[in-house]
Amino acid sequence: MSDSKQDKGVSVVSETVCQEVMGRSDAFTAVENVFSAMAKDTAYNFPVIREAIGHADALYGFKSGFDRDGMVLGLKSGGYWPGNIEKGLTNHQSTVILFDPDTGKLKSLVGGNYLTAVRTAASSAVSIAHLARKDAKVLGMVGAGHQSTFQLRAAVEQRDFEKVVCWNFHPEHIPNLEAVAKELGLPFESVTREELCAQADVIITITSAFEALIEKDWVKPGTHIACMGTDTKGKQEVDAKLLTVAKVFTDELAQSITIGETQHAVAQGLIKESDITPIGEVINGTKPGRTSAEEITVFDGTGVGLQDLAVASVAADLAEAKGLATYFNL
Ligand code: NAD
Image 1 (cartoon, rainbow, N blue to C red):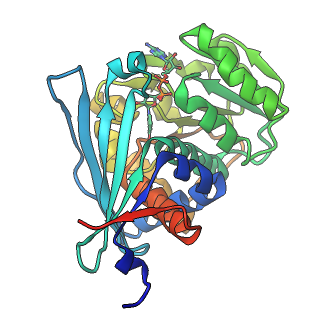
Image 2 (cartoon, rainbow, N blue to C red):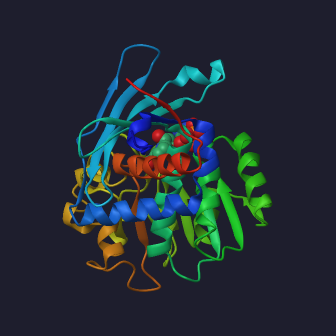
């Protein structure tokens, strides 16, 4: 019997191992590649299931898809359990399950909590790489929760930022983000939302808000905004009217208009679906991205299953190659 990966059985890649093997640059490449494949129609997301289960106030669901370029098939299962924090657990829980696209056999079980943060940060970083002005100097962070530190670390690798400005709904959380900025050697200032818009060249919103935090008239020409928090019907982070004066991009059109930041502007008839460009088109060079220094660009990062599968597949490959995966047979 050969000693192939297949013969060892199903690989298990723990949260700890994911943190050990999965770096930001691998995540960036995996996410950029999958956005490109989505725009070429060689990778597609299956319809998302997300349900309130009527127990523990939990929201539970599946995100799944198939990437024929990367030969990655599987799903991320999990959701949001608001009571977890009192149990010493993360509120967001997820696990990625990968299958062999040639046979349908279960291939890997991969912890999805750390990878969700890494792939979400990689998504806004990809948007900054392709859409922000090259001379962007000030990064504005709206939000200072769990995801925000991952967002900050990934963003600063894309431009020569000289300063971070931040606003958060819960001011008591701001020191967590400030500590990361300090570690990265960046001056940090806590400001009002309006002042943040006046200073920032790139803004990342990563909150649980259900109403606009950023007004259209506050945003200065040339700003790039990555809206990363809106991933559910009803959520909102920026003024819907802002989308009428910005060039709007997204990870996936179908999610953007239903659960993403553009849902409000589209529902109100302020913009049309055809006004929104999948970022994969920009990556592939089939549609333009930013075309002037004055343009405002908005990226609606809704978070697609294929992002999860892409980073989980890389993490599984790295863990297996480094002998850090464990195995079982069903
Ligand atoms: P968290 O609970 O750790 O932080 C929530 C953040 O939202 C905090 O900054 C908090 O102060 C702020 N907030 C809470 N209520 C608010 C309100 N009414 N108005 C303005 N701000 C408010 O959550 P997290 O893990 O950092 O995730 C942040 C958001 O990102 C969540 O909404 C989550 O669903 C979303 N998310 C999106 C993706 C994606 O791919 N797009 C991936 C993961 C998480």
